Image 1 (cartoon, rainbow, N blue to C red):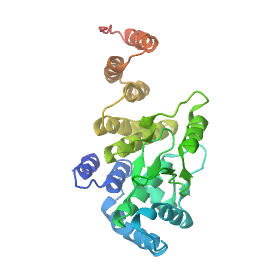
Image 2: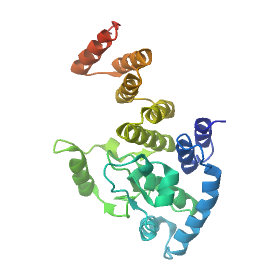
Image 3: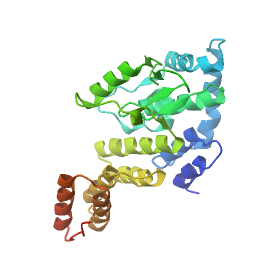
Length: 267
């Protein structure tokens, strides 16, 4: 199997092997990477983390786990502009720097191995964690507790004064959700790094990992435009149009398709 097939196969396990799947995503971009070897080496990090945890019930160990990772020099990657290495899990493990989602995937793997209850939360703009049943969330970058007010302030800071906290922002993220979000992150980072071929791999994977959005198809259409693949670009524009509910955006997409020499049927 190729790396993408290996990634998808990891999700079919019970339970899904999310960290290993993320490493197979990285292997699409680094032919020298051997995810099995990285997973074997991960046992050393498990021992380091476990040795520094206090003697508390498992349900109380999530925040100490995140603080322990912080002590071991795992931090948010604050390099500007953010590079793809912040979302490629083997490099995150090597450098101990990554985006919140990348750090969260590592923390979730550690929690699973140490029998510590912990879930991912698909908060917009900054992936978070939660102990099941807790009245707060946890920041994977250090373990800070975030209550409802903190989440609202974080959302406003990330998305502007008109953003409103919604229940869907606090939903648990499944392994597929996490990997789809990771792939979107990589797609964006590779585009910013002027690497459209790498971004195309990520854009294709996004569509395989869960229901795609209009923006997912538009993102791939933009990549195909850069790569001068008009037929493939047209396909994604048509899919985006089918998923579009906004009249102004539908008009814009229709006009773009007209320029490509195709008149879509509007329904």
